[in-house]
Image 1 (cartoon, rainbow, N blue to C red):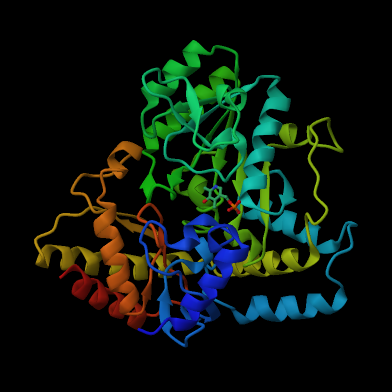
Image 2: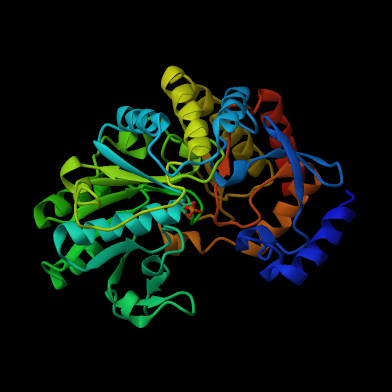
Length: 426
Ligand SMILES: *Cc1c(COP(=O)(O)O)cnc(C)c1O
């Protein structure tokens, strides 16, 4: 495979952009090699600057539920562009968007649009703090909630309850207010809640973790979490930036039949544009400015073009809920093929899948939390990644990410992917 234009662009990029990219995982650091510069996407395929073609399983890291450039989004955006790109005033589309979000996710009674998932989670914990008058939050090891200071915290050695920053620039005082519990381990939550009685404003969780590979929460674990939050007046926040409109029409909360107090959204909600949102109980949401005292604002929030793309995506979901059974069928076919290939090679690697989110870990252990996830052999993943890339299959350039199947993937794409997987494992 010739990637000379990508190599040339990456050399130029490195001179002007830190690491040559605008978001770290794109740089291929964990799989090594040169990041591929993409030029265009159609349906399930992406094409690079050297003219190579790939079946894409990143889907822009989650937003492309319908594949690249679906007509109904492109057409709507083209029309909206002619009306104006931004006004900084209310527009009708924001009202439509809010209605759609609340209809698809009934736990959301009111919603605020923002510009990214990071902004949604940062704002949601500020709201939880402002609403409860408490300072501390609990997050789970291995869950990703964007790059806000409060979330760039990992468990410190020894004492479970003390978090430490994972990045220089995050202060000790912000880490002091983030407590780290273990995913799928309700005892670790209870311990922290007991030790910090009446100090915890919110618990934030990816109900199906997608940023340590794919790791679903146990239903009973989430039910108990819900109960603890209700008992202790803690705001339960489901971070559904990835899972919202991905695993079901109403996200993970629909699959588990559990209502969080607040939900954060992003990715699919923007129809390929930069959008995030947070929403939930009206009683809590009414604390946000200007209805209430908790400040949060945005020059481009609810941007008309982004709202047009978002409403087009959500309308499609609302009118075609059958896409989720189609996605399930295709993804199950892919998983089955991968399992058969592993068996052929006498490999017992575990695969986790929920709907169209899938991850093969290079470990024989069942992956249920961060500790089991990190047993995966990332060197093997790097080799596998490049073998797949050479065969025209574009996977995430890092082990602890999800593979996303879209409605645009055909059975033929899935079959080709299974064949490439078989050859690559060899
Ligand atoms: C992607 C993601 C975020 C961050 O969203 P950005 O738009 O990248 O800021 C937050 N939470 C989860 C669960 C995500 O998958």
